[in-house]
Image (cartoon, rainbow, N blue to C red; front, side, top):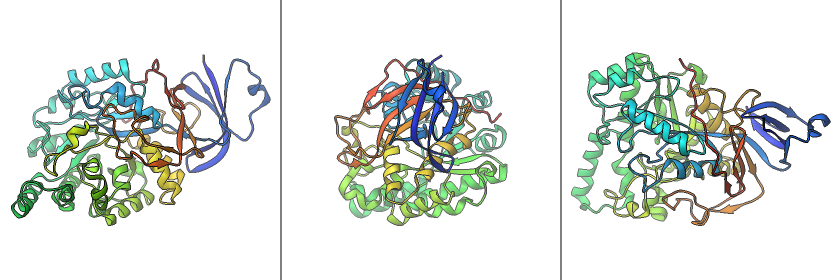
Length: 451
């Protein structure tokens, strides 16, 4: 059994920072030491010793919302390419969304993804199941130990994934016992806004109109309807990529996460950018929901700090550069983020927006708790050794030469980050080492304990 000791790191875990070491046996953490290691352990010639003096050791990041584009959209990205970008960014576990081609709305398509990930993914993996108006029977057959939940597009059409039948919604929310994760934007409000602005200014609206079309009102109307439904039916509701200050009024940050029935995620781009950045970055920061005002961004940051927002993720959604061209109505929405999400959050922590402990809590601890993931998200004996070593003293600049996304670009190009991911361990194995990917490593399917 392979044994590794990571010694003399600054361990950031469970609200504390201290100098210590971690002993790994196989795929698990065997022990966590505070202070110096025993001479007996250090003298064991069969144990690999990693001197992490001056480095920070964090639990591996868990991203609950990615679009790795496989199957059917693999010109943009695929499970192999994007999982490599993930571990390069310190992300050891991902949950992929169902709006692929074909969509993940049948058990056969779900099983195909699981088998494909077992073949090619460097990171640990899991897949949301997509809800439609017609697949309630399949949803009832899901193994709750193998899926994080059901993803619903409420009021915003994505292929056949718009769920707008009241009877179907009532059954999914009220009868399945699964977490319901939602994309919440109200389609009729979006259509009204498009008509309003195109009547005034024509069809070639520039990117600055995006947050006016996919507006605060469109987000709040959809989120509030979902909260009402979940509250009435006592369902577990998770609001993805919350983007407005107004939606925060729907949430309760004053109770522990395990007592919450309604939770929310913020994405890195909504915590970093504002609508004032459209003039600089253009379509590169076009996402759905849209990046909104400085006041919205600042409110989201505060909600992360006061636990109104529970977790931070990416909504990693690569497109080719040519697909991002066009005007507000024609350019693709979404962008690649997973390689740079931890670096961006640590950057904000260095500026005093968050603490480093809060970054670890929102990107590792609480995703594991919210989804009841089996033995991940913490640096604890008996837990899987998903770990990230950070070099806090080596700055680096994002360039096309070091971007690992298949699409080949990043909204952070030319930005210099202060913290570098040095090494990433997935299940005790070195997945990423100072610029090099372990191409032979394969992650594990994660399991859920909320049965």
